[in-house]
Amino acid sequence: MKRLLINGWNYVLLLTNGVMAAKYWLLGYVLFILIPAAVLLVMHTQRSSHILEEEVTNTMLQTLKQASINLDFQFDSVRDTSNTLFMNPKLAEYLNRKATIDQQLESLKELRILVDSAETNTNVFRVRLFVNGDRMFTGERVNFFTQESLKNWPWYEKVMNSGGAIVWSGAYLESFIDQGPAYIFSAARMLRDLHEYDQISGVLLIDVAEKTITDILNKIKLTKDGNIYLIADDGQMISNQDKSLLGKKMMEGEPLSTIALHDEGVVRLLDDKNPRFAIYTKVASTGWKLVAEVPQSEISSRAVALNQFSGVATISTVTILFLLLVFILLAMIVRNMNRRIQTVIRTIKRGGIESLDDRTFNAGGDFKLLENSVDHLIHRVHGLMEETYQSKVQEREAQLRALQAQINPHFLYNTLDTINWIAIGHNAPEISNMINGLAKYFRLSLNKGRDLVSVTDELNLAKVYLEIQQSRFPKSFEVHFGIEEGLDDLEMPKLTLQPIVENALLHGIRRSKGKTGTILIGARKEDGVLVLSVTDDGIGMDEELVQSLLTQPRPSMKSDGSGSSYGLYNVNERIKLFAGDHYGLCIHSTLGEGTTVTARIAYKEVAS
Image (cartoon, rainbow, N blue to C red; front, side):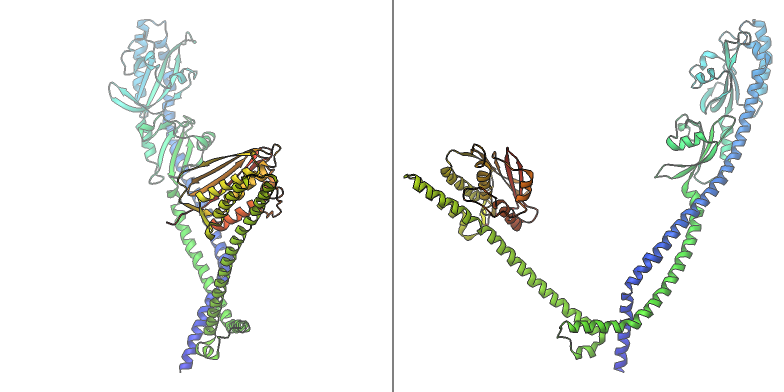
């Protein structure tokens, strides 16, 4: 019984691990089935939404065209009334500049009848005649006005330049003495004196109440939140429920150009916060465009519902196919799993893992044996990684000490050689000074065996070195220091500055034509980094040599300072070992002008 339970549990583990092993098949399913299906679904959704949007907007456009026909009927009725008055001979007699008072009175009676008759038209709100001030009843200010009172009207110049054709004004607020303020449209036209045709005798205005037009527009029910209005081809608002927008330019750019060029159509308004469509058609009698702004969300609502149903159906189908595929793949994987596990175990055993025994195999089966094998391998790998890490640390420490040790013999040789030549050539106490300087140098450089020194000691070491070289090359160079205060408590790798100073003297100044020059030594803190700089006005270097100094070891060095410089590469490597690859030396040099070497070091506070 126990054996059956163990076998059953092992089968469950095998099944679970088989599913996990199928991750690459699942990844293939996602890449080659699910993602392409999703892309096709998105394309289908976008295409169907686009088609449905076109159908809905075309339906709205037909509704808008019907409203445009109704507006044309209203405006044409007003145009006919204007033509009737314009062609009436009594109007011409009244406007005749040479007409007598009796002739004006006689023509005015019939003209009054014509005006009253015109105002019985339900589309006509008011007939207004603006004439010269010498005409009778111009002060009436109900139907008759002076022409002077119209000159500040916004559309006056356009009417004067129209040659007698009707000019339609946009909706504007006008105050009538008998009815108060009202928003109206006006069909205006210039009138000429028939006896003196070059003379303008007046302006005829047929007013239409804006309410007559807005009543037609309000009957248009396209969407819940749509907005319907009239605009001119230049984008100026002609009629809108929001009266503050009248006369303002409401469109510009590509949408306005499209609306101006076509009699009807649909254009998308470029507004990321409130995407919407502008459906428009032309009002033939005025040339205006009837525009309906419709939110894109309302047009797309039915398309969204349809696409959601299609999406659910597609995803459901893909999911069913996925489940079938998983079960088929699982059956194939489980059937071959034991054979693959045995192959792995045999490979591990051949690798020399002695901890695998028969007891472990019998207690947990193949999976338990595989787990123990992998666990043993992990411990072995961790042990090897630790050993490798310790070896690397020891190697870097040995490399650091070896690099530091290479500098002392080099300078010691040059110094002892100099003392020797001074002793031979001079029978003077300079030898004592040289020996004293050399003692100071060794005391500072050895630093009791410590690898770190204070910045002050490092600067003193450079000074001692230069004092020794002054004895060797008297009056051949000058030294100036620019040391920032507050550097006494900072530590840095020893023998960092002296090799740079040596390089400036021996390779810069001593190799120049006059073998004389100046060395500038600076030290400062900059954003938490210690910056040391050494500048000489010596021979300088070309760019190729500058690039190679820090990337290639240059061990050959002659006793007189000629030859290649090993010191800069050495110092640069020691700084990187001490502080990291982000720190080190930077060389700027111009051939024939001099060299500046800058060292950037992550300093440490001196331990108290």
